[in-house]
Length: 266
Image 1 (cartoon, one colour):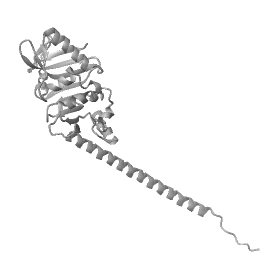
Image 2 (image 1 turned 45 degrees about the vertical axis):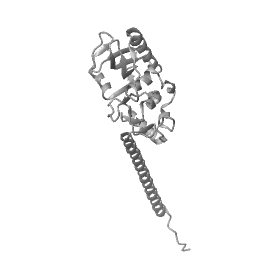
Image 3 (image 1 turned 30 degrees about the horizontal axis):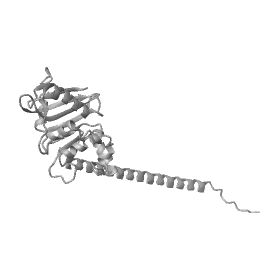
């Protein structure tokens, strides 16, 4: 089983004993809620979580590093249950409403999205239940934003429950995924960034920023195709001119090579 660490709202290590404080873990209290992605040859989960310790209710951030993506949520859940609930007597608190702790509760503690893990990356971009309804060209360009431009694909969703059901599908892309609070700008290391937006009518839609990037790349590709067409046309015209010049030269040579007619004086 992987390693589990717990930090308080100031980034001070609460578990295990002797763990180092990390100020960066504070970001899970004001901007990010959940981050999942590759960590060298392993996978890392960092998340905001509500717990009740033996003393009081706490808001904490956790870091779990696991060995495989296939069982990442289940392994993290088992580590929390064994190390925090059973060994330390903590209670994992279910948040009310659409609070940020709900996503961690749904994805890790309840494992609500794990059934969707067999989806392929193409399902995410196509017109499927949790897809973005993009055509083939748009899917290709969207993937290039991540792979070739090292960019961030921003997606908004209506609530944490929707994200929880689809999150494991996005994990199949092999990219780092970060879920942030509403309107928070995506972190630089997020290849796919899911943010909650209360004014979305559909389950998933591309953020305006990603849509603008997609449109720019589409226009760039169209311009490249136009330039290729112009280049091909220019080459064709040049070839025809060369062919015409060759024909003219051959005609001239044939004309000068013809024998001069002789007159019979006999």
